[in-house]
Length: 245
Image 1 (tube, helix red, strand yellow):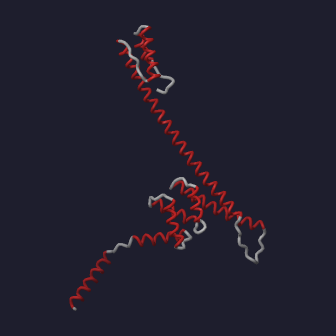
Image 2 (image 1 turned 90 degrees about the horizontal axis):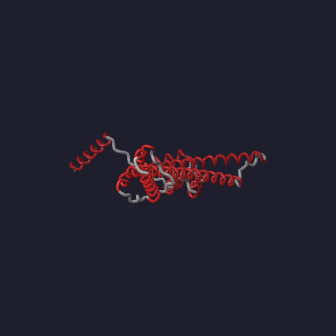
Image 3 (image 1 turned 180 degrees about the horizontal axis):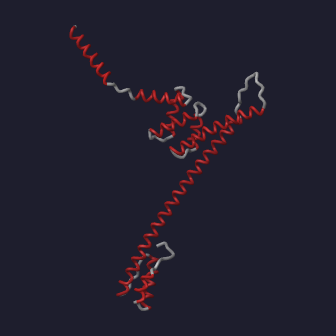
């Protein structure tokens, strides 16, 4: 039964008190045997009946114990999963920040020919650009993890690469489109972003316009009642002209 203890109740003492010491000893030995092996030994005559309420009590307690073990196991599994997701988010965020920071070291900041810029100003510009890029990438990671799933290192590389061509808001908008379409995959997001990049989209407003144009193209405007009447009148006029001829 996988337990190192069991419960007997004081109300059962009334039954035990009616037994001889020898009979009570046999009952307790049978109880221990049942708890250890899950098999009830054969008892003679009256004792075979007396043991029944003890067995029923033990069985009920075992069922409760199994339910408790099940709940504890499920709670442990959920806790481990939450911890794993949290660690994945933190790892992705640190990976992204470190990579962007390392890239920022090699950024060449263009300086106008007629402007004297000292080292402190140049360093500030580079650091500001890095912070902005890290902030945008962090928002991308947070949206993906919260709405699509745990972002893998491959997915992070893919989305980060699009930051060279479009604003981070465009990438988040593409992920929103994936959620609305219930196609939460990096492949779907890549397809959307590829279409926008090929169309020259760089900002969120341009992406929204491109999205509306695509929807209008695939969902033609429904004809109004006035347009339907005009179309029918025009068709009748054409028929009348043909009849006259």
